[in-house]
Image (cartoon, rainbow, N blue to C red):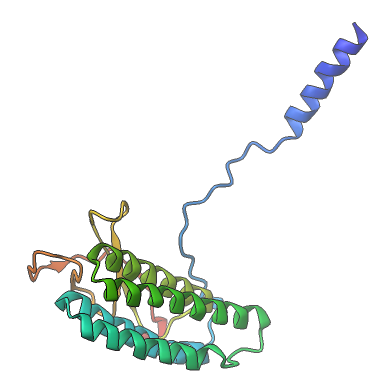
Length: 195
């Protein structure tokens, strides 16, 4: 009887000591303004501008413009990746990693554009937007408002994301070529000094 009670006691101790809280999180991006670095804010502007130009090429289905803009943006990313912009080593590492991730996604944009595969181009552009968002959140970006849009897409279960500096924009992935303005999904980054 004693060994049987010992086994039950062990199970009870292990069951009580086990953490049953669900630690899974659906949070994709987290903005933390206290990490803001004005130098990094300034250096990320060419990335945002290049991304906006890339969206123009996608909207117009202009493969040569997409190729040209992608290579120009890769050149910008290569030149700013090695800049030492922060004395905080963790933030500097986040900067280098974020720029590297955006470069990798742009390589996917170039490949899918070369293959002229609309599905792969959509997926690559979506992932480029996600990586830019990740970089902006890591550096605590707050120089300008960035608006994040989402639209249903047959290739991506959660829909396709894209960024804009404007509150209303045209879906660059819309194959119907309708000039419809989409409503804002949410404002992710806010310039606190603008008000």
